[in-house]
Structure formats: C-alpha cells, structure tokens
Image (tube, rainbow, N blue to C red):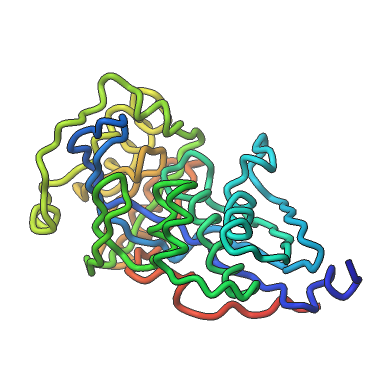
Length: 295
C-alpha cells in the first residue's frame, strides 16, 4: 500500500455513529424459532461514537478502537465491512478506527451504530451503490438494531426489530445516566422473570404514557448499579418519569428544556456519570456528508 493511501489522501473521513434510545420496549410473544416479538420506539441522540474510515487498495480490512476483549472476528464494524465486500464483490479494503464514547452494554446501540456507519460509509467510499433497504438487510443478519441506524429516522419497530415505520415523536432533552456496569443482552433475554406477553400497543398508547420497558426490573436485579442510577435520577428529577434504554444499563429522564435537565444534573450524586443531550428524529449519520480528515 502506498504512503499516500495510508495517510488518508484517498478519502479518509470521520463519520458519526450516534447512540440510540428506546422510548419504550415491550415483548409481545415469541416466534417458533425462539426469537422475541418486540414493539419499541427508537430515537437517536446528538451524541455517540465517531469512526475514521480510510479505504485501502489492497483489500485488507483492519480495525482499531473496539471495546477491550472483542477480537477482530467479533467486532461488528469489521464484520459489517466484510459482509458488504462479500455481498458486492468489492475489491477495496478499509482501515476503521472507532473513537468510543458509548459504553458497551449500555443499551444505547454502540456496536450496532458502528456497524451501520461502516455499511453506509463504505457503500459510498467503495462505490457499491446499494440502496438503504439493501444495506439494512445486510445489517439485520449481523444485529437486530442495525437496520434502524441505516434507516436513519426515528421509527416504531416491530417483529424482531426489522419492521420499521417512521414516526415523529417529541424531541426532548435527556438527562442520561451511565452506570459503571453493563447488562449482557443475552442474559437479559434469557431471564425467566422477563415479561413476554405484553398486549400490542399503538403510538397513541405511548403518547398517553401507557408504555414502559419490560427489561427494567430484570436489569435492576442483574446490575445493582442500574437500580442505584435510576433511584438517583428519580431523586434528582423531582417527579419527572425515569426510563431505561434497551436492555440497559443507561437510563434517562426527559425534559422540555435543556436548562431543566441541567438543574436536575446538578442534583445527581457526586461521581455519577451523566450527560445532557438532545433526542432527535433524524440520525446525525444521515444529516450531512462527513468532512475529509486533514493530512
């Protein structure tokens, strides 16, 4: 590989990989193959990871910045690049560097967002010209949340997460709490106490406040840090409802104004890892073309 290609002259760029939240999460049953039928509402956050992606002319796919202990063959970002190459016959490779902000096991979709960003970015950089639905189908084989990030719009999701319908819920300010422990998704789904028989709901039910997260009691038991964070949020937010994203561990309270979220943040215990951030109906990945990385 040439020195010029290595230092980014051939199109290296930074791409956003935003976090997501689930505004609620229900399980309505199980399919014959054991997969759970879900209902949820996804939004994006104006915050998340960032990927630097540089195409290579030798076909090699390499990566840096994956969470500790994740081998290259298990890294969703590299798996996404290989899946796109295999599906399209692309001959180029890529260097993928992940700048992590989203904690592993937080229920904010970090790995899935990284994979979706790789699919969207390399589809452009390699000139594959796949449609968004085609990229989403590739992503679904890697992870149930990846199509949401490829889709790039807030959506109501059903099935195993692959049936998406655009929605435009309110875009609140969040006081986000990040406990110092993750919740393993597989363990949460296996838990015998998990409720799996929620009646189907509608967007009107969500708007009326009749939806919750069936994983919350499971996560609070599996990871006491989640329980502590939710209690701290409830105490700091003075009656504002507190929710959990995905299978945990991140939890949040919603506010109409940023200032109110900042006041609640100031009441959180010393040492708590918190963030005030806006929820958005359009993914930062889809809002703008990435700038080139400077030499």
